[in-house]
Image (cartoon, rainbow, N blue to C red; front, side, top):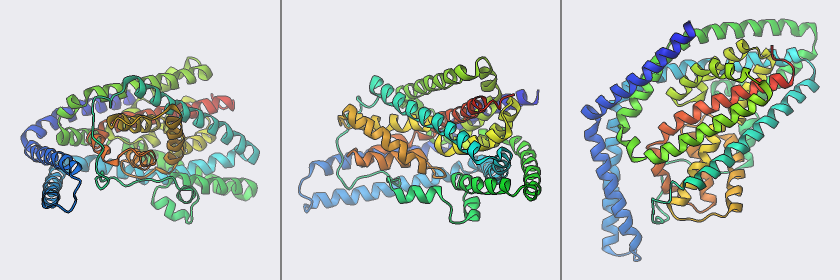
Length: 456
C-alpha cells in the first residue's frame, strides 16, 4: 500500500510540476526567454555573415565580432537571471539529490564488501564478474546499434540544413577526449576517502573488491568486520526509507524548473526529434525486458512492477543515481541474493548505462545529419566503438552524455557548435535515458542472480 502511495504521489508531482512550471514560465520567465531568443537569433545571423566574409581584416568583420560579443553578453546575463528565477524550485530537487549522494558511497562500500566476503572464493568473484561484464557489453552494443539504426531510419537531422560554422565557433561544453590515462585515473583510486568524498562509484568498487576478498581470507577475524559492515548497511537502508519520502517534492521541483525555463514551446519545436528518441527508448526497453524474459520467464514483469517507483524517481530528477538505493532494496525483495545485488548493481552504474549509450549514438549522428556530413557504415561503427570506450569515464560529470558526445564528434569533424541544438532539450531527453538506465541495471542484476542460481 505504501509503495502504491509513493507511486501515486510521484505521478501527481509530475503533473503538478508541468502545470506550475507552465504558469511560472508564462508570467515570470517569458520576458527573459524572449531576450535570450532574440540574442540567439542575432548571433546566428552574425555567424552566417562572418562565415561568408573571407577577409578577416575588414572593418565590417571586426564590427560583426563586436556585435556578436555584445549579443553573447545579453544572452548570458538573461540566462543568469532566468536561473535565479527558478532557483527555489531547483532547491527542492538539490536537497533530495544531496541526501541520496550522501547515502550512495557508504552503501556501495558496505554492501559490496559484505557481498564479496560472503562469496568468499576469489574464483566465484571472478565467475560472477565475468557473467556480469558479458551482459553489460552485450547490452551496450545492442543500445548503440539500436541508436544507429533508428537515427538512420528517422533521419531527424536531415531537415536542419545547417551551414558548417567557422572554426572559432563552438558550444560551451567541456570535451571528454579518449585518453587511456584519464580512464585509468577514473578506475583506480589513489585515496579511498577521496573516492568516497567525490562519489566515484567505480573507484569505490575497486577498493571494495580488494577489501572484501582480503576480509574473507582472514577467516574468523574477518567475521567481526562483516557483521559490523552488514549492520551499517542496514542502518543506511533505513535512512534510504526516510529520504525516499522526499522523492515527490524533488520530482515536483525538478519538473517545474525545466518547464519554467524552457516552456512547453520547446516540446512542440522539437516534438518530432523528442518523439523519435522516446519511441527508440521504448523499443530498447522492450528488448531489455525480452532478454530478461528469456532467463527470468514471467517473473520479469514482477521485476518491472517492483522498480517502477525507482524509474519514476530517475525520470523526474533526470539522474539514475537518485534511484540507486531504492533499486538495491527492491532487488533483494525480488529474491536476488544480497552478494549478487551488492556486486552487480554498483558496477552497472559505470558500465551499463543503456539509455545513455543509445542517446549518445542518436545525438552524434543527428548532428552529422544536421550539417549534411555523410558518414559511411564503417565510420558509424567506429564512432559506436569510440563512444563505448569514452562513456566509461563519464560518471559524476554534469550533462555527462553531452560531454562525451562533444569529445567524440570532434574526432569525426562534426562541428561542436551543433550541440547548441541539444542543450535546450537535453533535460527532457535525460529523463528518459535515466529511467532506462535503471531498468537495464535491475535486469542485469536479476539475470546474473538467476545464472548463479541465487534467485529465490
